[in-house]
Image (cartoon, rainbow, N blue to C red; front, side, top):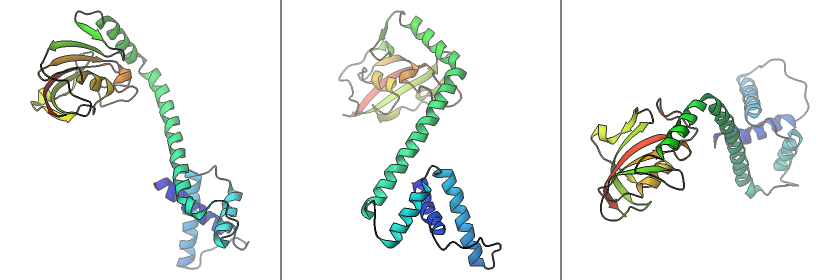
Length: 242
């Protein structure tokens, strides 16, 4: 992990310069080695500020001294890499979660009309003739029924699909490309995955997928905005492998 490596080097470099002999600051750089040494220290300081500014500096120094002397170690050397990897992975995950929550709140405001349009559409659509609603909220309509066995989630299938927004705008279509699509049956968005398992070879269904089991807060291209309800017509051509 880039952040982990940078932060670990920062810890060593920063504390190395902190716990040496307490000399007065140098006012000029006399040699190329002096310049390289100073540049390395400055580069590491910038990295630590950017990636690990909440570090306890006193413990930085103590850890450096203990490591140099190989005495009074509070963490076993063999555990260092594992501990630091997990620590920085956890920090990165927390930062991503905060950023995602912030983005989701902003999207709730910016795309409130898209979300409402989807809710209103599904509320009306569920009363339409032939439309069935599952426990997850997926709505579907049988256009043509096939024969044989249903695929498993792990089955490889060959399908044709035609995806549109609730306004009828096409965002993706194997039908328009005139090329069937082959994939595992569980490789799509949750609502599509669920609906696909209802089909038998030769079946053609129309799925109405609520945003919660579609892309949710994510934007996918120009047409699939956050909180978009999606419509797919899907035909199961063949189950290639179980």
